[in-house]
Image (cartoon, rainbow, N blue to C red; front, side, top):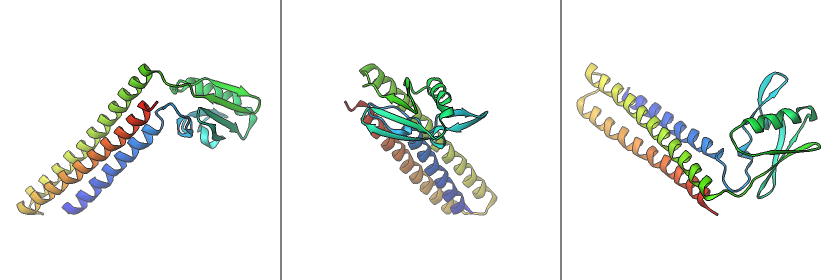
Length: 185
């Protein structure tokens, strides 16, 4: 039973790191990236819909994102959604497309973004540690119930700690890479 607990916990830890990576893709750097706006929710005929389902999004230049909706009637809704989102960009509606110009980041804004990255990294670390604690409690329960022996329980706890350390290191690796990307001028 304990090996199933360990593998299930490791799978959840992998998912926590993947969620962190996906969240950090939405953090604005000095370069244009479609991931900045893909998940912006647009009110489309009364239904919140992700922007990438309503329009083609591309990056023609290093500092510009172009959003071309498949239905021109949704242009104003896209503009409102981008203004309402917290990405800090001003949309320019240009006939049939929405253009987003990405200004260079100031040093102060870069530091704020790094703080956001560190906060999100700490949340991911806490999530991984909580998963470890839950698995350790399950192992202790199994050990107490007699389904596994003391030696096997100790080995499983050591394996759990190794897995946890690996995923904490993955969180740090992802966060440091994003921090370097933000601080790059």
